[in-house]
Image (spheres, rainbow, N blue to C red):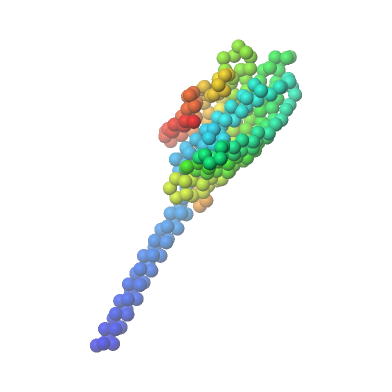
Length: 244
């Protein structure tokens, strides 16, 4: 009887151990499955677009300001191309933080001696680290500035702005992904005194893949409302406010 009871005790202990092993193994598989299925969400796409716009992460708004500043401060001659480099960074210890380095070239196009437009092209790199996302990108753009006549009420910009790089989302599971974001705008108006964006619209396309290999694609429209505000409307119908 003692031998039989001991045997049953050992068998029960083995069965319990095996059951726990199965549960632990199952949990591991579920966690692995969750990680493997990680994909970029609409909220991530909105955050990425916001960071590509706002000055606090070296975005589109500050590039618009820089391009108009070049026209107002650099001595330009009709038909003669010029180039320069721009390096900027946020103050030490602030959040979000950013830094970028851009190589610019620009050309003033004229009718005789009367300026018609100023064309810009730039390439470079940028980084930012915010409370919800960090990113390291290569960036490029092409801007055409019109409204140069003194009687024109505002400057007008038509632009293409691209960021191509890698991000880490700080929303949820802190997963990483790669992306390409393109902003194309038409008739962005800029105040001639404050150099702030007054109005205009742009399309945005965001594509890429998460670290698990899940691809994503989002499209939308950005409407600039003045007073350092914009609205992002994604094709899903979701709307996000952007402010800087």
